[in-house]
Image (cartoon, rainbow, N blue to C red; front, side, top):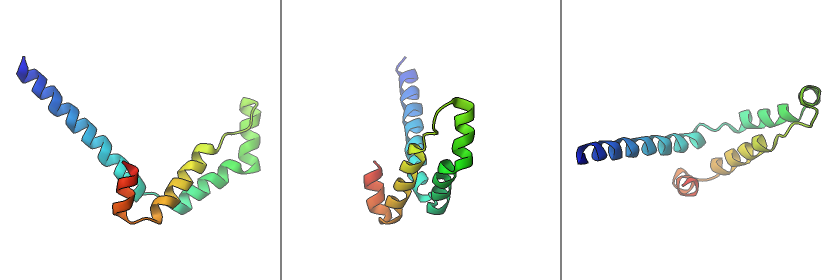
Length: 87
């Protein structure tokens, strides 16, 4: 029985390590120009009009804006400082 628990704990630790490593890679692959383009596209008249036509409400671009701000904030920091603030 304890063998099964140890195996599960090892798998759980590996799973959380993989998630942590993926989150650390996110900011290193962040492209400020792509993030800005995503925000810009979200706010364009065509994109807003299509969303309003389909769903009857204004498109919410706040998450794209947050991604852009996050990208800018990590690009201005050294990797050590960004690692600490990302945790």
